[in-house]
Image (cartoon, rainbow, N blue to C red):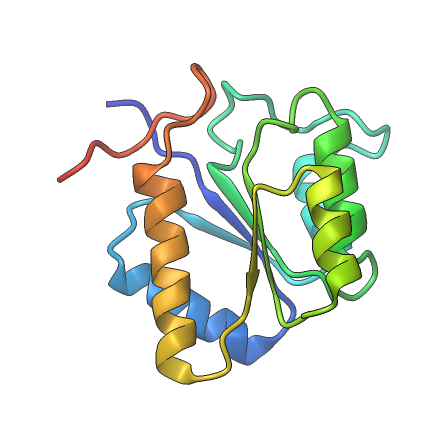
Length: 157
């Protein structure tokens, strides 16, 4: 079986990060989770200084999905999304905005830039946990990626 692609989680809030990792663990995702704690760290994972993508779809480092917060230090999530969707080698990576922002302008801008899903972080612990587990399961297991992009875990495996 081909190697599973990692999930790139871009989150600066330590509590949300801890809960997200715990929810992914409970969902029994076999994917590695790569954590970036700010937008600059996410961009350095995905791109060289010259703007070329570090990884291509055939690379094991190429993410199956990027879970991206909007309000990030150094480089905000909107700019990270814009860079991802502007690059030929990274635009096919599904990006899920997971944010506490309920601002309509963030929602509209994210979709205009090509985000695949926009999820407002639930406030309650259980709701947050369930949402994260469902996001991970959908994008890592159920979603059918473009051919050649991401080998995935077979259903029921």
